[in-house]
Length: 121
Image (cartoon, rainbow, N blue to C red; front, side):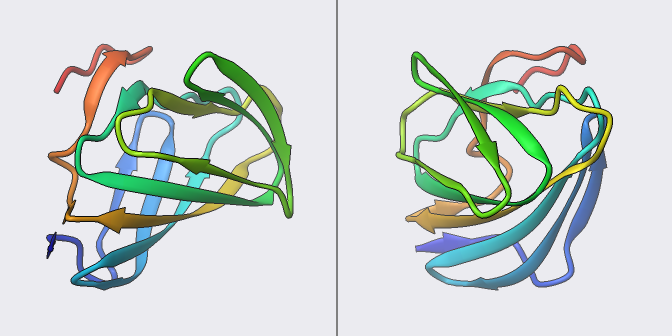
């Protein structure tokens, strides 16, 4: 297993921010904030699963062909190879904790299909 994330890693994206809270060879925990009206790219991962736990706000989650509304204290599991995204249609931040597991955990395992901000792989 490979994890390229390190505790304290962080980045600002067009939709908000992420910060690594903890990492080890077999998992990574991130705190992700999605700005009001922000939306992540429709994407999938070949090498990792993700478990999202909403801790603040209300999010619209695309999981395969499903659209799910998730609020604080609700979660969603995203298996490897399933297209997914999260968006914030509200005027308040959405904050969630993402737990990644898999055999390769890094930003290179993002396959984008749609991106509001024009980003590609």
